[in-house]
Image 1 (cartoon, rainbow, N blue to C red):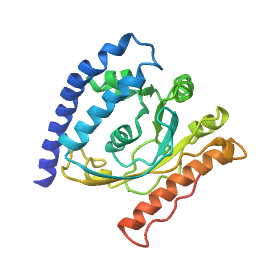
Image 2: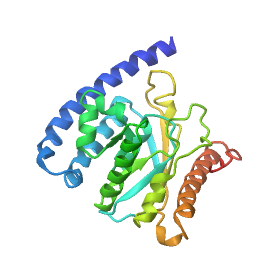
Image 3: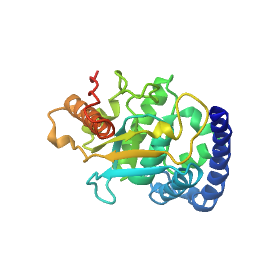
Length: 257
């Protein structure tokens, strides 16, 4: 019965997401479609924040606890690194870090959500296409250099076990080093309590955590590989800290590969 209720509630949340994206996006973001990409997002990302807040706090009635501070300036761009436990993760990062995401191309075709995601700064790629991946990497750098923040999940997909994945992809951090751009490490915890993996469903009133770490800068590291490893290690340490707060003495730091 609980699983069925979660399934029905999840369908209602999906419908609410689409309808609210259509309304909020049309009123707040669509008028900026004539402004070139890379410039319009300074305004339209606020629309993404408003929609994400509505989904998290109203549709899901989630109770986020957010700690930490990136130290970024108000108009400073960055790559945002985070672990990935749930579809709730990117919404929290949009709300609290003004960051849109690097995402798989399939999301672009979601009704209203995909189009307005693109209009507010999301970058979509076909993971199977080397040309698409290269284009997306270049666009991430252009957007960040223009003062925007792009969230990246180095694990590539949501974890089903709750543990950090052993294999991670750190290319965007290496690119950030080459272009002298900062990376902000973040960690989420318990977001799967709201939107679980792998089931289709949702649960209201979940308490979720986001901890924002201090921005890392290339100037403090010897080379691109050292910078990339340090950025992911910072995420691991933040995750470990949240695990220890939830369950004292628990949480090992996973190896970087």
